[in-house]
Length: 403
Ligand code: SF4
Image (cartoon, rainbow, N blue to C red; front, top):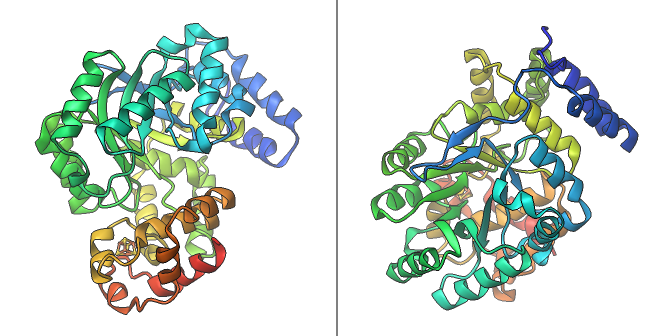
C-alpha cells in the first residue's frame, strides 16, 4: 500500500488507531502527534461540500455533540485542526452539558466561533417554546447566532406549520439563526419529500446509511431535496445492530484487508452520494475522531464489490435493524406505543453500549406507554414490518432492559 504524501497511510492509521483503542492514553497521544506533526502538501483537513443552496461549504464530517463536552475539550480543538468545522448539538443533549461545553470552548477560543458551522435543535414545537430554547442555547454556547437551527426529531411534516415558518423568518431577521430545518429518524422519506415542497426549509439531518440509501423511496426523497436546494446531513450512518452475525465478521475481515475498518467503509458508502453534504457522527474521543477523519481524508473509493458486500450484509441482518418507518407498525397498533422510538433506544443500549442515555430516554415515556409496551399483541405489526423484525420480542426486551 502506498504512503500518502504526508507520510501517513491508511494501514498506518489502522495500526496506530488500533493501538490507541486497545492501549493507553500515551498511545493515543503518540498517534495524534504523528498525524498532527505531518506537513506536506497532501490534504490535511477533511474536504467540504456545498450545503444545499445556502452558499455555505461544510465539512463532510460533522462532530456530533451527544457526549460530555465540558470534560472533552481536546476533541473540539483537534476537530478544528482537522477541519471538522460542522458541529452538531441540541438543547437536550447531556442535559445541556453539550451546549455548555461548546460555550466553554468559544469562551476560551473566541476566534473559533466564526470557523464553525454550528447546529442546535429545539425539542419544542410551539413558537414560544422554541424562542425560549433558542435563547437558552445561545446563552449556553456563548454565541450571538446559530448557523442552522432544527426542530428536533420530527416523524411527520405536520409537526411544522405556518407558525413554524413565521418563527423561522423572525429568528433569521433578528440574526439569531442563519438557516432553518429539522432532523428526523422516523418516516424520513416522507418528511424529506414533503419538505421539498415547502420552499422554506434550508437543511435536514436524517437517518441515512448503507441499509437505506438504495431504497427507491429514499432515493426519490434525496433527489427532491437536492432539486429544492435543501442541504442534507446523514446521521446514524453505522446502521445499528451488527453483533452476533457471521456476515458481520466477514465484513470486518474483508474491509481490513482493503485497508479500512468496517465503520470507515460505512461512512465511505454514504459519501458516495454527492447530494449528502455531511455525515454527523458522535465522536466522543480522539480515537473515533481520528478514525473518521482518516476515512474522510482518504481518497480511495469503495469498489463495486465493497458496496455489494455492504448490501448483502444489510439484507442478511435486516431483521436486526429498525428502518424508522413508524407509519407502518404504529398504525397497525393504533398508535398505542412508539415502536420506532423504543427500537432506537434499544439500539442505543445494545449497539452503542450507551445504557445511561437509553434508560434515561426510555424513562421519559409516560408511565401508561411503558405499561403497554410489554403487554400488547404485536403480530399484525410484525406481519407488516418491511424489515421482518420480531417486534413483540424486541419490545418486551426493551421493557426489561431499559427500566
Ligand atoms: S419496527 Fe418495522 S415497521 Fe416499525 S419502524 Fe421499525 S422497521 Fe418500520
